[in-house]
Length: 213
Ligand SMILES: O=C([O-])CC(=O)C(=O)O
Ligand SMILES: [Mg+2]
Image (cartoon, rainbow, N blue to C red; front, top):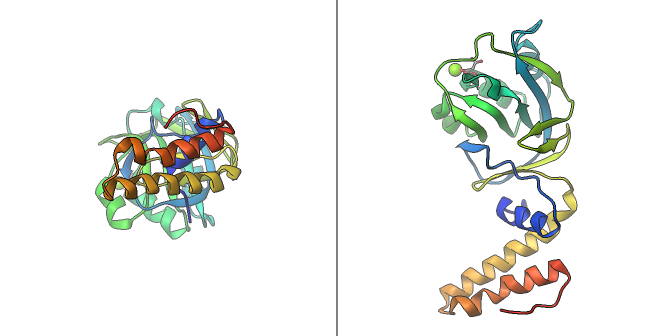
């Protein structure tokens, strides 16, 4: 089971780590939780030698379980991603797409059921404003470094590139504690009483005794 991104982010935060990409990325189409591995692409301004064709060739490769991470697309106000590329990505087995830039055809993402998070929607394409600068090299999105093969979780609440997968167990426990709060509230507890489940989990993960409820 994939823990919720909210729980993963809180556990990362407790360890002084980061990795969430939302914001700045926003859901263009979101789905239940998926855990994939990053396939990194860096885009840069100008037509370059080959435009976006290296991206098209990549989309014809085996992408089973991969989350495409397209960094640097925001140097164009146009859409670097849309229905056609989504169909190609799905056919190659991709689990999701992150675009640091624009997308269009969001209605098709819903029909195709592929999660896509991006900075903005755009009407026109990118024309000759972008080219592929690298594939498989580390990329930076809003200060978060994503390396090829890194674990990425996407769900209803966000997107996280995991600096370490050893937070997943704690994140599941954290999510259970939050669920205990919800159950207690449903059973009529006060928030002060119910929140204790979460406060105890935070104290445990911090490795410090709980000082207040
Ligand atoms: O044509 C493109 O490259 C972008 C787009 O709208 C699509 O993938 O449908
Ligand atoms: Mg299109």
